[in-house]
Length: 322
Image (cartoon, rainbow, N blue to C red):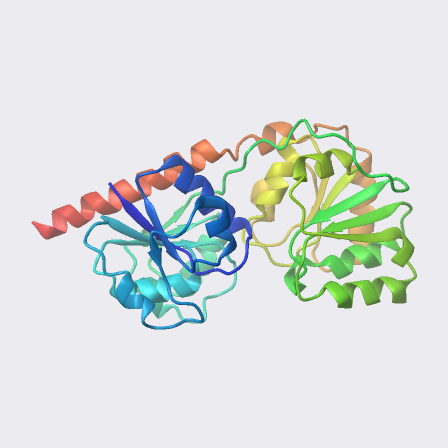
């Protein structure tokens, strides 16, 4: 069974990491995407190079008889794969109602990274029998070393600097707390968040580190991992933090409760006061409190369950072709 994975993103985020894990586990597969995408730098050039800027000519590049299944990993990829002529699996990682539900109706199966997303897709009118949950998988981030020399406690957040990640609420919570906020990630809100830190009077205690690769060391350096998202499909960085032994506080938004469960502190989203209280509470947890919870989200389980979906789709397609 050969799968052509289609990913049109020009960024490196959780979905691209999951696809990289799949491609490493399934060397017989190929991927289609834009050659200058960050994914290409990590897994090698695309098997099927696509045009950039949503060029519709990319559709015709996906009509490939040498692959058994096409798997679309971004909403734009789902649209391109509409006419691929192969059994189609769409991976859904975001928890908002899709703007164009029609592109999902062609799919034989839709893989949702959380039960929350599955319910969102049912609400959008997609057939429940087409929707299956496969949680994201994470590699161990344990064993890092402390590399940060900031006043403690260090409240760390890892995620793209975009509105739904809720970094503004972390900065507002910091006003009520001692210590340092360390924000890891890049995105369009970088300057706006820096300006907010100045306005709130916490700019000397809020450090923006940009994109980093040394996540193990950062998690080992944080006193508490804070995830203030107000929307989230799942939150795989939380599973990484839990497995690494970090204390965790997160907002109970989207699929986040499915990850954190009883392994950390959950607070209502969008409330800086409640977030600050949760951060204080999380600081009192023993290190390693949520390790068992984090270990549920392994790459091996994600690959095994994803392959089961692909095999089922291929088997059903063969029966239909009889």
